[in-house]
Length: 232
Image (cartoon, rainbow, N blue to C red; front, side, top):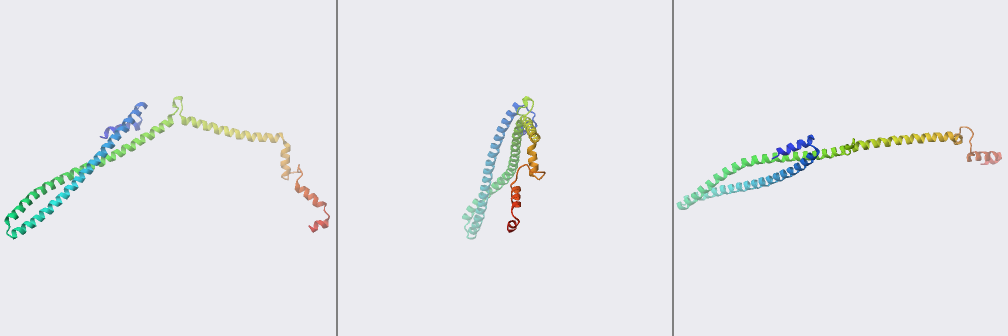
């Protein structure tokens, strides 16, 4: 049941099919896997019912064994009491039950062997179905990746490559803009030396250009009488 699906899956994973055939094959594969999954579920239900019937047969067998044992005890009791007709009636019932017991034991043993083989086959089918579903997911992932890599490939490059080129262009533009800003600032300083002189003066490099509040306060203090200065 699974061999055709496995062959389809190998073709899809190997990329050996044309694009149109690949899409069609994926659709057929998905339908086949769904059909196989339905068959496996049906087999599970059938096997569960068979096991239930087997359990009922075992209970029937235990009931027969208990009935045979009870009838044997009662038949012995009838013989001890001299009631031969009743003992014979019990013996006939025991004979019928023993024949049924033997047939049921044989059927149970035979069916148990069949169930073991069917269970093993079902487990194998379930394992192969899980493997096929994993493979189908792998095919879907691969198809999405190939689509992402090949969008726009008809123009000579993919969308990913186009995005990478655009990102590199943006980075280069940002780098040029940053360098341009630095160069503009340098040019601005060269064109306006007064701003640089003011900056140097504020930093204590040479005489300050602007009058500072600290300098005014120091000058005012120097004008105060020495005594008043001391009182402060």
